[in-house]
Length: 142
Image (cartoon, rainbow, N blue to C red; front, top):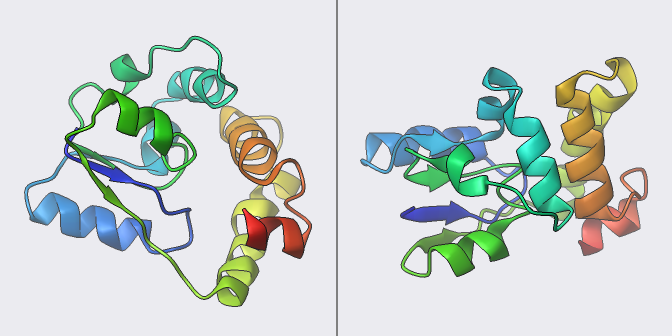
């Protein structure tokens, strides 16, 4: 692992993924990889809960990470890959909150209990925001 993305989703990770891959830091593990490989959801969720999980098997072959779930696990990834650079992407907090509420959070309301929703509501909502994704204050202080 050469680059670990510590910035949350909705801070430009899709554009950063394209840039990293163009600069030779690909393939990049991004939330879209979980959608493409539903079996990754259980491993990523277990890792996020601090349970034994073969995160290295999920990330095998990837050179960089961005977006969820890796941004929630960046400290563990830093320990496993101390030589990696850490990239923190940020966004104006109020604009970020509105964007997250209108996309990531809305998916948990609209969709059923698919692996994608379990990842969003479990790893993102519970572990990243302590279960308070509806709370502007909780999201902004995370």
